Image 1 (tube, rainbow, N blue to C red):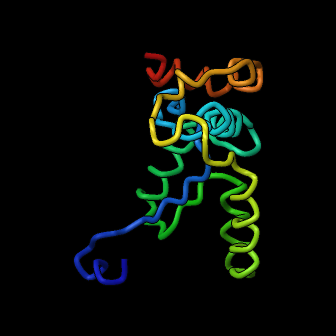
Image 2: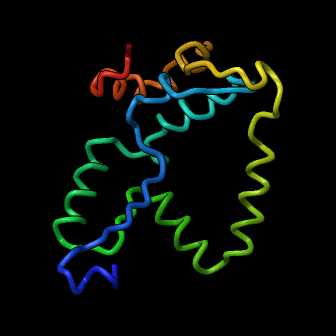
Length: 142
């Protein structure tokens, strides 16, 4: 940003957090694909943890138009950035702990399948309504 400013070029860093785009159904999953897909699809659908693609696009465009150095798109992302700024070591420890909560290796191993091939009762339930709606709006249902 500083190097390009003399050339009247503005750089904006976007820190997205989770966005509801509907794309988990087309993403590739390995290992315990059903469990990993469930993490992503349910997390993508939680209104307090994720942001709609439309809202994200508006914030990104506004930030670029205004010449903002940084655009942080969701409250959880904003809190994470601030927390990391104050407690970088603790942040690394917490992320390491969270990594241990993710599904263990195994399942289908290195083979990759699309999310839509990893649907379960949980990922097709009311818990994922917002992601399903986003998939329809963004042509991700194929």
